[in-house]
Amino acid sequence: MHPVTPHTGSIPTLRAQELGVREALRKSDWPRAGTLLRELTATQVERLLDRSDPKDVPVVFRLLDKDVAVDVFAAIEPRQQRDLIEGLQDDDVQELFGQLQASGQARLLDEMPAEVAQQLLASLPGSQRASAGTVLGYPAGSVGRRMRPVLIELRSEWTVAEALDAIREADIPERRQRFIARLPVVAHAHQLQGMIELSRLVTADQGATIESLMDTDVLAVLATEDDETAARLCAEHDLLALPVTDETHRIVGLLTVDQAFDILEEEESEDSQRAGGSTPLAQPYLSTPVKRLFRARIVWLLVLAIGAILTVQVLEVFEETLETMVVLSLFVPLLIGTGGNTGNQAATTVTRALALGDVRPRDVVRVLRRELLVGLSLGATLGALGLLVAGLVYSWDLGAVIGLTLLSVCTLAASVGSLMPLLAKKIGVDPAVFSNPFISTVVDALGLIVYFLIARLILGI
Image 1 (cartoon, rainbow, N blue to C red):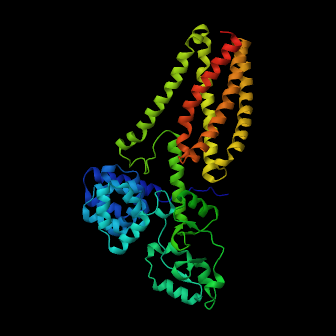
Image 2 (cartoon, helix red, strand yellow):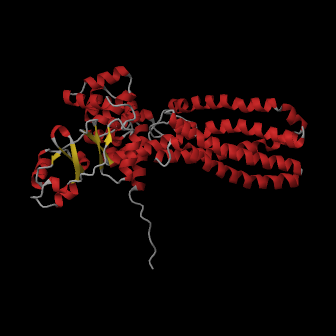
């Protein structure tokens, strides 16, 4: 057999070009930087901007060809767009803003100060301003804010030949042609009748009617529906595009599969950052200004520091118990760490199940029953181990305290960890906010109380 040579593709070249651009920027060699940038695709430029210092982004952008600049601007995150706008001239900003889809314009306007947002909106032609205004009319976080406009509508009485002619006459720009992979079929007043995939249309008999080919069992969502819920429906049903309608079943837009995956990726990132006790950055790490990183973390740290005072208060209440038997303090890190980890596991599992739609707040009893059993099982296993180790090293009375505490703490932590995300969902708060850091703080305090009460009972102190 011949050895297999790994394929390295264009990665070394891309890295070399990236380093070359950075070196040219450092030396203010604009012609060299521009030459290197013109050798990159829009996707490669986007990755370069994701890894660039915020102060270099406007400089890089001005060196790009116009068409590439438009594609890159549309692809980067709204918060990156906002930072970029602050470093560009008004004429450049208005031109780039006008090239965005209505949903992209709405997301960017949400990030901008009110005065700047009004100026940008006013710079649009009448039809574009109306489209952006329509999208802005939907609630933040709804699929209406993320949908793409319907580029072409078909009629059920048309033949395949007539439909294909209509698509050609629509003169859809090349960069938007992928958005017509699944087309809506409508009646009067844009009432949604069905959907048909372009691939089926181009392979069908030219004389066949759209009505005979279209899918009438259509899954659609209201424009006011949560964008994550709509995205999961699109992904789970493997749809190229999910129709978005108003209350009267008129089609107002489409959620395409690429948008659906973008939304799900954003939600996953937000949940993981909130679970770690940080406000979501909503843009790549290296392109985020340091002061924004500071703001994203400091509030959570202050909140958690205040919460940690509960643990200090508990230790102060049981100060005499600790003074009587100092060895109890040795096991405090073990117990609160185990409790926090158990609660985090339960919270993460339930939060994920909520996001996937596997459970709902009304399932609270079933979830609690399952987590109680899991917590008891974990506590019994760890408690038996704690009893054995502490009993052999110190005394069997102390071993009993450690064993019973682990049993109690694991059961309590699993229960609290599972209930908090459900409570958050019920009151309309992001379940991830109630995840790991907050649960650890609560479980630490409760776990210490249980620990010292069991110690007093068994050891008689």
